[in-house]
Amino acid sequence: MPTFIMLSTLTPEGVQTVKNNPQRIREVNSEVEQLGATVKAQWSVLGRFDFVSIVEAPDETTMARVSLELGSRGTGRFETLSAIPIDDFIASL
Image (cartoon, rainbow, N blue to C red; front, side):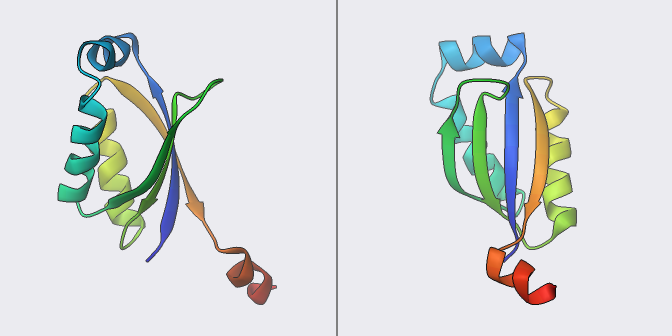
């Protein structure tokens, strides 16, 4: 299944939501599953982004739907990268 790296930055509203209800992070991951993708791993990070998530989805269209749905809430901004396994990348050269 295709793998994507989702970089997330909370808006001020998102920061307040997470501060008031930290379990909201896990709830959002469950909502991602309802949209057809799976959060395989997730980290809170320091720097430009607040979270790095490894997400599997059947295709780019599904991942675009996840990004659009999450972004439409106004609690975060998302940048999604398609991840190509290094062996697949080398084989394609």
